Length: 150
Image 1 (cartoon, rainbow, N blue to C red):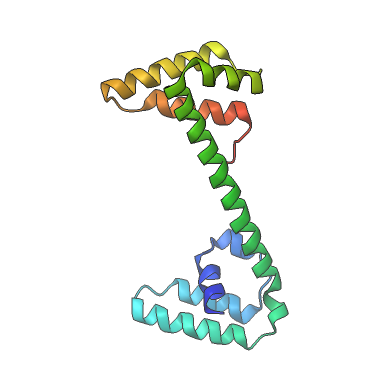
Image 2: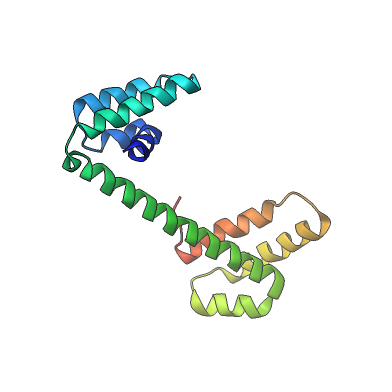
């Protein structure tokens, strides 16, 4: 129960408000959030876990389900970002081969703009400049490929 208590305390107030919890547990979560001293916070977290154990497991089924969905969504978003980063690196390193594959897969891409971003990102990388076009290329790829999870 301590792990679940820690996850609940870490949630944003808005997200926590969407989860069905017993009133005494919700009040204790608010109390724990106000504690800054490490030792006191650790004791209150233990008390929160004890308070949660007094309730049936069913009382926290919705919370556990919501936290599981949240974890799965974060994992999917992370995987999508990694795919885009890999794609960006392929475009910068492999050039026309990777570009041709991308355009074949996503014909709606603005080819001229994409080529310009790739060229500018290479120049920035070679000149050791701040990566403005590198970031712009990532944003454009995220938009064009539909991997927009922000």
